[in-house]
Structure formats: structure tokens, C-alpha cells
Length: 162
Image (cartoon, rainbow, N blue to C red; front, side):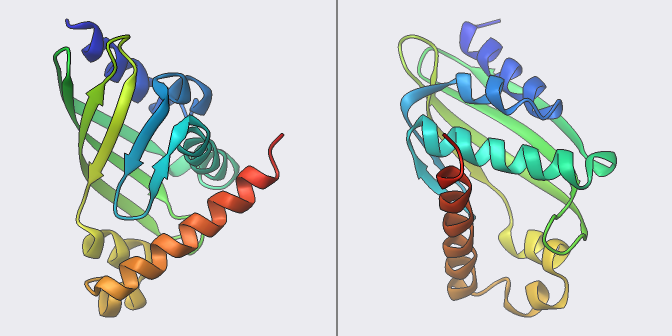
């Protein structure tokens, strides 16, 4: 197994256990992260996102949490993983099954330099938000609104951290 495959396995094993500190340790200081809900720069923001999400899941909905990962592939420069998260969305308390394809780049030291998660935002919004997601989840302005809300929530979360 390539060392970067080991990094991804460590990352997703920690994620399954809601261990955000171990997840954050897999990223380079200047890492970038992007998905339909977040666009982040630096380990503080990326790690903070995982801390915020893991804390919310541990606090409300731990019994519904399950993460499965597969198709871990990596070489010296790039990597890929498939993962599926089953959880209760903390805002609406609705159950979600999100299916994600993740692509990575790595530093020469074996840390994650970039991480891009891709998933069907409309599918996610229908599950997480119900009728509002069904009606608006396909619209670019709605996705932008969600990104603004997640950015605000993360900024507040990080402001409360030392």
C-alpha cells in the first residue's frame, strides 16, 4: 500500500470514529478543501470544518452516524476515495445518506494538499432540507446561499475556538 493510501485510510478511519483531530493532522498547513457546501483554505479552516461537523454529530445524532469508505487509491501525487455518510442533519434532524467521490493531491511529505469532494447537491438538499431542498436544491443561487451559511457557521465556530 502506498503511504498516501495509508494517509487516506487513516483519515477515513478517523472520520468514521468522528476523530476530527486525527483528520486535521492529515492535511498540510496550506491545504485547500472544496465541496458543494464549503470552499476552505488552510489547516485551521479545513480542520475547523471537520471539528464543527464531528462535534455536531457527536452532540446530536451519534446513534445515526455511519461512514463507509472504499476504492482508496493513491500514488505520490494524487489520490481518490469513495465514501458514504449516513447521518442526521443537525439543522432539520432529517436523515441523510450522502454518496461522495473524493479527489486529493499530496505534498512530498505525504500530507493532503488539496481535497475535493463531489456529490449530487440536489439529492443531498432533498434529504437534508425536505421540500425546500426539493424545490430549490437544483438552483445555483440556492447552492450559493448554502455556501454562505456554512461559511458563516464555520467563522462563528472558529471565533469561539482559542
